[in-house]
Length: 410
Image (cartoon, rainbow, N blue to C red; front, side, top):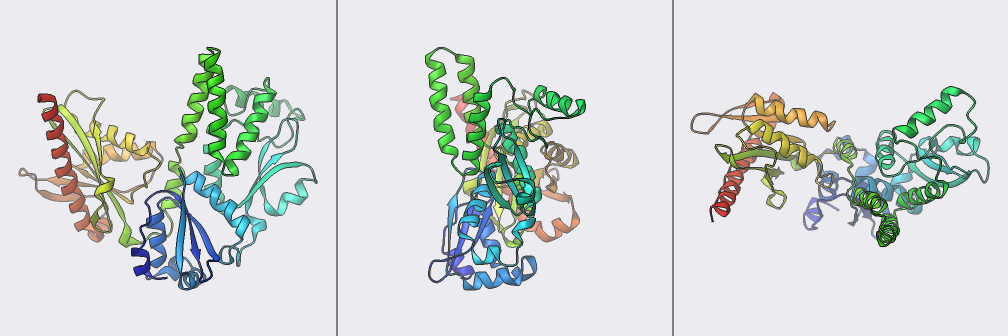
């Protein structure tokens, strides 16, 4: 398979899992992606053997087609990838890899099941037959798996103590459990039936059956609503929303560090438009591969301000944008303005624990680009794309402001 074959296929720009297939439709390799189009394109870079390996370069040469399955989040792509590799054991995923060194997720077979992270080599030494209720893995990226578990813990409260619950020998260990209950990391011990249901939901989630969990929760919510138990119904509704809108920004950040093709670099540019503070709006535009990706442009009505304050408006816009974990993260952010706007954007990125470079485009009195503020290497390599993104954001912001103002006047 080559770059021309890739360009002839319309890969979606969403999270998911991709499959390189051989001449007899056999699965050669399975991978996950924050952005399927960007990730698969990276396999056709001229320096693939340096970025990945000669083995992967050989795999791409053997492949005839690439298929994919979309997921709602990067977290679900990670889980699906792991389950499919375990089921199919593709040649290029398993070759030269020692599964015993990778992490597995274990749910113990106890009165109060615990969720544990165990190395493959320790599975048989730490657990006897019958000790394990459910087991998933191997997860090949340790750091990514740890970030994934942080997200899972926000969805489901579970015990991960080193010893079974009730067998703690020190006051310190018991105190730690009580403290974690108080801050919401561990469930309340009083409701055993609810905890068993939570463990079942964790098992379903790691089996890739999120929709089954949601169906069960919706039935439970309707039952509470029928008996006018509105507080309980509201709590379940929030849980359903969390499952449907998984915030996995940390996973996207980790994923975006690897295997990038510079020709498909994603640049997001932001601009704010208003008339002395009235009808204030903001926009995000995307330039990828040196071309505008207009289907990914976004509009924001600024909600937190009534007076002109471009840096504050930019911060609001970025904060709202970063809550959209389903949007692929950029490799570069461009803002219209000077160091003040640049710092405003960097503050929001730090709050989201993201490391994305920011370039500001400072203008002269005629609103023409005067200088670019940011990393010189990035500016030198991508100057034309930066200026294109900035010009597009300015044009799009003015058009949106005029549209909003006209509607108000009418």
